[in-house]
Amino acid sequence: MSNNPNNTNSTATDRSIEFIADDVTSNRSNNVRRMLIKEYRKIGRGAFGTVVQAYMTPDKEHWYGPFAIKKVPAQTEYKSRELEILRITDHPNIVKLEYFFTHISTNDHKVYQHLAMECLPATLQIEISRYSHNELEMALKHIKLYSYQIARGMLYLHAFGICHRDIKPSNILVDPSTGILKICDFGSAKKLEHDQPSISYICSRFYRAPELILGCTQYSTQVDIWGLGCVIGEMLIGKAVFQGAEPLLQLREIAKLLGPPDKKFIFFSNPSYDGPLYSKPLFAGTSKERFEKCFSRAGPEGIELLMSVLVYEPYKRLTPRRILAHPFFDDLRKEQYFFPREHSQPVRLPDLFNFTSMEAQIIGELITSIKPNEEQ
Ligand SMILES: Nc1ncnc2c1ncn2[C@@H]1O[C@H](COP(=O)(O)OP(=O)(O)OP(=O)(O)O)[C@@H](O)[C@H]1O
View 1: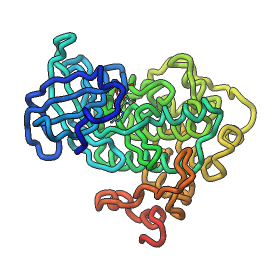
View 2: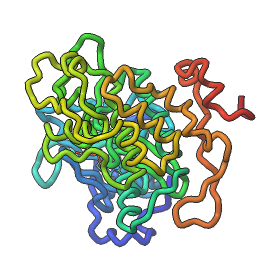
View 3: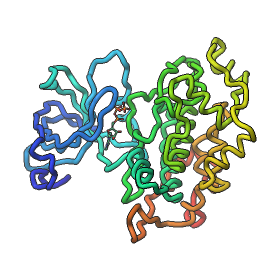
View 4: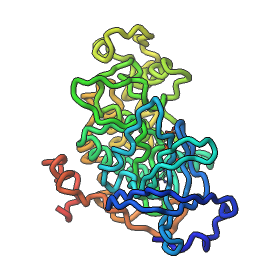
């Protein structure tokens, strides 16, 4: 619970919008009550809706928040499973849904679904561009800290069969002062069922796994692992690794680094694919040499991790538990502190190893490689 937001110094106060929502459901208790919502400022805009920072009160005395309220049209042709998924997820690296309600907009008189989530101060996209605009590099420790937490969030999601399907830096929330990271935007997410096809035209272009580019409809949660590889690479070099100018050129960008895709991989992804094959090498040398050149600052372990994640064949890409156990993250196991950006005082790392019994079960015998020695 926060203080009355009327007492804050927010510059957006003058422009704030208030409205009453009758049926606000608490995601924790399922209790439904009337609340006054006070919106402060727009913090995000996506393809389907807007995200505003807001406070809520049941009685004008006790204020809750700040929340990030995502508003999406309640009825669209596009099926969003965001509410269903956020209702069942409960993990330190997945954004937490606190309340939800529907409300008719006074602007267009349409019904909007409102998802009130915990609010984080930045996205990874903001963080990455902050560094690259200043011609600075993100510290390797921060890259490890963020990458590890994305993989941990994926371990949890994938255990439910939930595929996020839109992993990219703007869908990763961070608090740079604590190092905490949470995956957000489950608007494209889906629980994948065996033998049931799913659309391939999902995921933002630069982060699309090669099988999606080829039109595969029987893909797995490993499409998210490709996205993770792209995000790790982007943190390292300060810009998107594969920047295809149009959808099919995206595969060409991938082939520049990985080499030509295998014919068998193309056939198994989509037997009726008739687009460009990029079967001739686009660059001299081995793919290992190209990875080493592109991601030199990751060190041998970081390069090895990226080469095990950015792989054409989805089944060859590391799974989240193997990623967590990778030696690239050994620093996080050895040291307990980090220096947030522009801080001269060290800050304790967030708890990275407080696994629930469900996580421990998925991790299995790898727990000894993942947990720091003293915590075993
Ligand atoms: N919980 C949150 N805390 C802080 N900011 C948030 C939060 N959720 C979303 N945002 C901001 O709003 C932006 C858009 O949110 P989100 O990606 O969920 O919406 P979207 O309509 O699906 O967007 P897109 O079409 O770009 O995927 C995020 O990139 C982020 O900047």
